[in-house]
Image 1 (cartoon, rainbow, N blue to C red):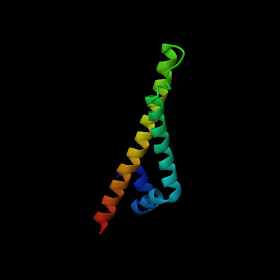
Image 2: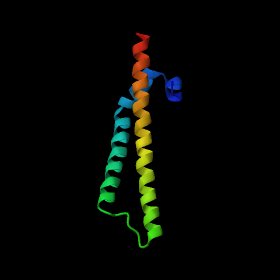
Image 3: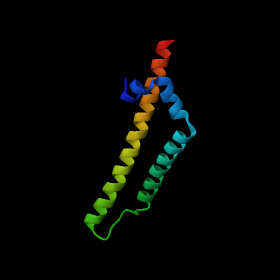
Image 4: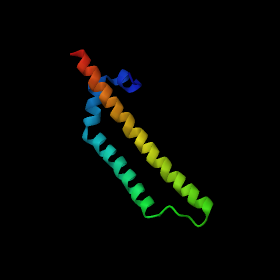
Length: 89
């Protein structure tokens, strides 16, 4: 079981995930991810030289990967919380 579920319990975790502020936070993250990808498609991460271009692209990629990791971890924890609740019944 994840550390978050151990500390809060599956019911509280699901309540947190479903809370409007949490949903807003996740929506904002996903919108940021979408915006980064759209900028990438429009070639907006091209710098004045090769080194700058590499840095801009690496920074954008790191942001997308971080967002993906956060969302994936929340999703996996939700699935785990639901499984734990189901097993209790």
